[in-house]
Structure formats: C-alpha cells, structure tokens
Length: 113
Image (cartoon, rainbow, N blue to C red; front, side, top):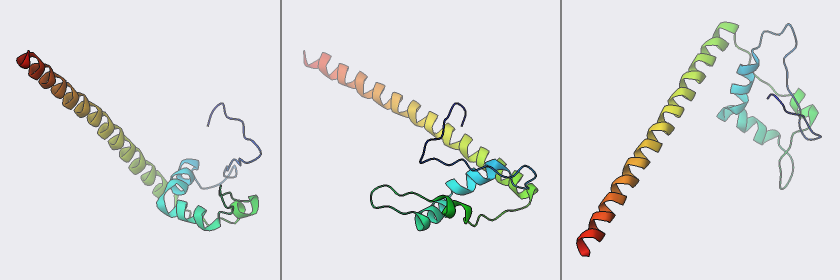
C-alpha cells in the first residue's frame, strides 16, 4: 500500500527476494475464505482480534507453481472486473428506478391539483 506507514499493530508481509511466490497471490489467498478462517483460528483478543508475529511466521500458506499463481491472478482480476461492472449496473438501475418514481410522483401531484 503506497504512502502507508506501519504502526505498532501492523506487520508487512513480503516474500523473500528469490521466493517463488507472487505477493499478489499471498494477498489473494489471505483475503480468501480459507485465509480468513485461518486468521480467525489464530486470532487472539476479546474485542479486537490480533495475530502475533510468531503466529504470522507459522502460517501455513500453500504455494502453487508460478504458472498456477498467474492463473489465479487472472481469475481474481476477472472477478474484480465483474464486481465493478455489477456495481456500476446497480447504480444505473437505482438511478433509473429513482428517476421513474420521481417522475410518477410528480405526475400524481400534478393530476391531484
């Protein structure tokens, strides 16, 4: 995350220089349902869950081949593009629906005068 300064409760995960893992794959995995369950199982704290540095070091993240990571990245991009398209269409639908109700309401008021 550009222009971000880690604080005392933030840890930056980076693969080693000659690692065979793509950082975007790590992000995708940790955001996935499986990754979130893993965090939930390791999390500690009553009100705000947190992970210790040792917990992070012991996370068991499966590492597929670079080719499989590239495929996963393409799938993630496609799914994000679809979500963006759906959100855009939802906004357009809401605008059309609201505009239709506003016009109908205006006609009803005009006819009752």
